[in-house]
Image 1: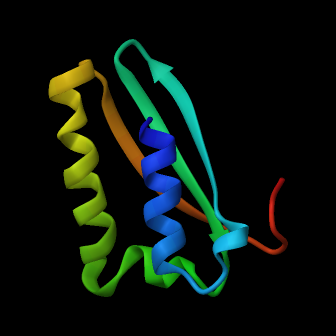
Image 2 (image 1 turned 30 degrees about the vertical axis):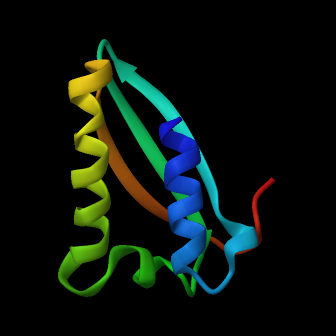
Length: 84
């Protein structure tokens, strides 16, 4: 569910929505990492001025902790070519 939300949210913001890929990795008990892979031109749009966009996304995702008990770390990585 989280991955779908993040992917759909990111696709609304970027210029290359077809390049967005979201992966969720377990880093330990009750701690996961969400990685957003985006076209290199779109990374700045996902992060936003002074990190405002990514911080807003982290705030929304942080609210999910109350429901499922899992903490999340969110990262944005760039792609040279669209991934998978």
